[in-house]
Structure formats: C-alpha cells, structure tokens
Amino acid sequence: MDFGLILEWTIKSLILILILLTGFAYTTLYERRVLARIQVRVGPNRVGPAGLLQPVADGIKLIFKEELIPPGADKWIFILAPILVVVPALVITAVVPWGADVTLFGRTIPLSIANLNVAVLYILAIASISVYGIVLAGWSSNNKYALLGGIRSSAQMISYELALGLSFIGPILLAGSMSMNDIVDAQRGMWFVVYQPVAAVIFWIASIAEVNRAPFDMPEAEQELTAGYHTEYSGMKFALFYMGEYVKMIAVSAIFSTLFLGGYLGPFVDRLPWLGPIYLLIKIGIMLFTMIWVRATLPRIRYDHLMAFGWKFLLPVSLLNVFVTAAVLVLMLPA
Amino acid sequence: MFRSIREIGRGLAMTFRYMLTKPVTYQYPEVKRPVRPRFKGRHVLKRYDNGLEKCIGCSLCEAACPADAIFVESAENTDEARYSPGERYASTYEINMLRCIFCGYCEDACPTEAIVLGDNYELSFTDRRSAIYTKEMLLEPVPPGGKPTPQVTEPGKFVRPIPIMSDPTD
Image 1 (cartoon, chains in turn green, yellow):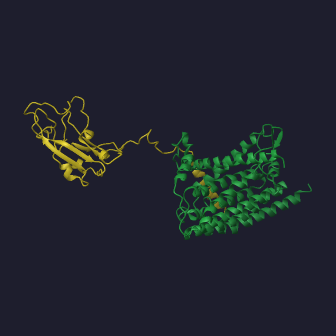
Image 2 (cartoon, rainbow over the protein chains, first blue to last red; image 1 turned 45 degrees about the vertical axis):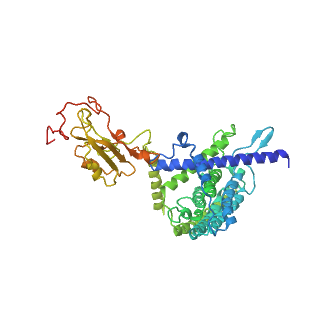
Image 3 (tube, chains in turn cyan, green; image 1 turned 90 degrees about the vertical axis):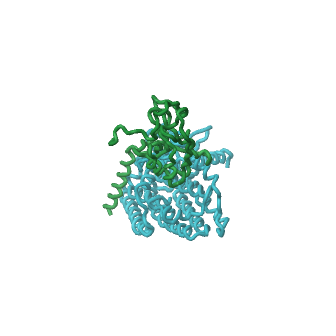
C-alpha cells in the first residue's frame, strides 16, 4: 500500500465531499429559484448577486438557532440519528465515476474514489442504512407524530427499495458487470435509457420515493404530520437532515445519469478527458431539474395509495422488465 | 392507466409553460407599485394656495379618532402673526403613528379638509417617542405662489375660518 495511493484517496475524498456540500447548498438555491419560476415569481435574488449567497445566509441562521433536545428523548440516539442519515448519502457517491482516467504527476488516477466490482450492490446496501436513521429519529424524539412519521417513512423507503433494486438489474444485464465503470464503458455505443426505458422510469420513480420527495413526501408532509420525523429537530441537527435529503437527491441523480444516461460520456470526451465531469454535472443538473419540476406539479400521494403503487404496480413491472431483458439477451446471444 | 400518465404529462407541460412566462413579482425597492386612488397613507396637513394653513384647531379630528391618536392645542390668530384664516389655529398638532389605525375618520370629520390621508406608506421608527409626528412633520410645504406662515395680513381680510365657496355645487 504505497503512500501515493493513500494520498490520492484522501485528496479525492476531500474534493468529493467539498463538491457535494457546496452542491447541496446551491441545490437548495436552485430548487427555490426553479420552484419560484414555475409559480410565476422570482426566487431569492437579494442576498448576493442573483441570490448566490442565500445558502450562506441560511447556514448562518441555522447555526444561530437554539439546539433543543426534548425532555424524555433518548439523548444519544437523538444526536446519532441525523448522522446516520447524512453519512450514507455522502458515501454512496464514492462509486460514481466522474470521468475517464487522468494522468497527473506520472500516475494514472481514476476519477472515482472506489472502483468496486460490486458497486451497485454497495449502493443498495448503503442506501438502506438511511432508513435506520429516519426510524431512530422519529422514535427517539418522544413525540407520537414524529414516531408515526418515522415509521411511515421507513415503510415507504423499504417498499420502494425493492423496485429500485430490480430496476438496477436491467443495466447490469446489458453491461455484464455490477461495476459502475464497466456500466459506463458499455454505454459507449448507445445510452441504456434507449434500451431500458421502463427500467429508467421505474428507477426514477423509486428513487424519488427513496429520497422522500414530493409527490412521495408524506413522511415529512409539512401540513399534515407537522414535519414528521424531524419535528423535534432544530438548528444544526435539522440542517443535517436537510443536507441528507438534498445530498441523496444529488447522489441519486448521479447514479441515474451513470446507469442510464451514459455517465461522463458525451461528444469529444476521448480527446478532452476533462469534459467528462462537466457532462456528468450537466446531466445531474437536468435530473435535479426534473425532480424539482415534479415537486412543483404533482400533489402529494396518500399513504395507502403510495404503498399500493409500490407493491402492486412497480414491483411486478420491474420484475417483468428483468424477465423480458434476460429473455431478449439470451435469445440474441448466439447472433 | 395510460390516461393517468397522459394527465400527469399535461400537468407537467403546463407547469413548464408557466416557467417560461414573465414573473409577476415587483422588485420592491427599485420598483414600487403605484398607489390606488383614495389610498389611506401618512397624514398631511394641507394649506390654501396663498400659503395659509387650512387647519383651524377645532379638534374635531381629535374627537373623531377611534384610537385616540391625535392631540390638538389651539391658539388665537392675530393679524401680525396669522397661521390660518379665522380666529383659531392649531399651535400643537401631534399624531401618534403607533396608535393610528389609518381609518380616515379624521379626514371625514375635518370641516376645512385640512387633515387628509396621503400616499406615503413607507413609515418606520426606531423608538416610541419618534413615532409621535408633530405639526412640522405633517404640514405640507408652501405651494408655489404662497407665503410661509406665520404671515402678516391686513386686518379684516381673513375673518371667516372657512372661505366662501365660489361654486357651491362643485
């Protein structure tokens, strides 16, 4: 294990975390501006040129807020829960390939932090840990409504994780490997969204449900469950939940772009390798816009409809997609 | 089922179209929305065209105010120091803006149309004492062609507190 490799990993991780945290801050601003334009008004545009310092102002406000731990709450779990939500969200992006290999200082540096050969399995496994954080948050708050919100949210997330996992299988079958780098390489001919439109749509719907965003945001329904599982949180702990949600949005958009939209591939990316991350960022931006657009348009889905949709529609359709893809590949293989 | 997908698509198309329209927000301090007619803003004590104040210090506005915001003290006009036509003028006229509810009853009660509610809505104070607006703050500037008060006038000219109307039906 040479020192150069460790240094490379450390620097890449630091850069990625910085990018994710800045991205989270500006995603909140992006969302507020896009939501505002859809509602025929202008979003925040006062705090810096065109509102660009608004996330800084929000962060400073949250730091100044009083941090209250409710009496009767299980103190250590109450503090641990936001961490259990944020850390998996940040860690999922470790397997996303941000570009082709780059040569710097005489070393070939791959632009992903870890090129796991079971990267997809890693993503599914780590995403499930966030569910744990949400349940603990609701339960340790010593508040009936927070508990209900936490339980509802965890039930929703584990139901949609099944459809999510099955929709991953389409690109895996087409690429022949679970490694994200191999999946991107297999899309050099044609993006997988063309070969697997059903899987792409199911992945997208299931990931919006995973992230607990509208129209699937019943657990944090501001108007109904008084903010659900994060009712009792204030100040920086609340900021961590908020961060978890938005970083998960970014991570899920990155994974969708890698699996279905060709990742860092685009015109001229072989000759100019630094275009790779830029293409990926553009694709992530477009997917984030779609998430915000859907939030602005659709009403919240009632909880029983939500569960019925996940179990009775998405799961069978994604299973069907797996069978059809596998059958087509087997029949086409000798040819 | 395909119909519901089509309806969701129509909804998304509509929000996309709305995104492309111009926002209706007024960017406030740079652009201000014009004020409607008969808008009840900050009070103004009016003057006649020759510069004399319309207010005769009768305190009908003080009596009419439901919030007890107006305070009036009157004094006698002399021809050497004339503030308003007639015998009396308001020597002290204060309105407490924190009590005022901007109802316009003082405007309705005034016999000479001296106190009116004008267009200014951008009021702010930093302490309670500075919220009491005095006569100097409320009085309108002298119109062109008039002289500032107190004026020196010839005796016998401004005897009536309310001037004779040239056309009563106007």
